[in-house]
Image (cartoon, rainbow, N blue to C red; front, side, top):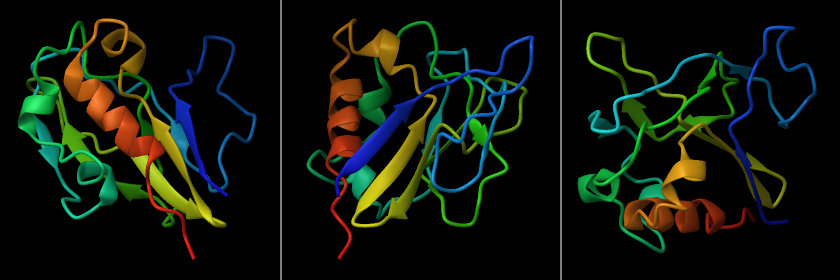
Length: 140
């Protein structure tokens, strides 16, 4: 019961992550968005991640530093919902920056967003979004 938020993992030069880190399969890619000003498109506007307890909007992605995120999820099982699309200029959009799946009475979240940079930098929107990830309602 509750929510498990897994922040980015990485495949290394030796090989891919082989440990099962999620209840349903997905692949950790090398996809990233290094432009901290890259447009973020909200693709699942009704999801609680964007609405509770904080209403997330474009301004929440202002003042991010260095990048939007790294090691996004790809090859998602059908149980996952995606929240955003984003991309660097001249690259195709990626929807794997945040994935959410119901699991038991709680939720599993994988995120490649660079919270490890944004939270220490005091970026308000990163705090709003991270609190929302922790606050996804339980499943009945």
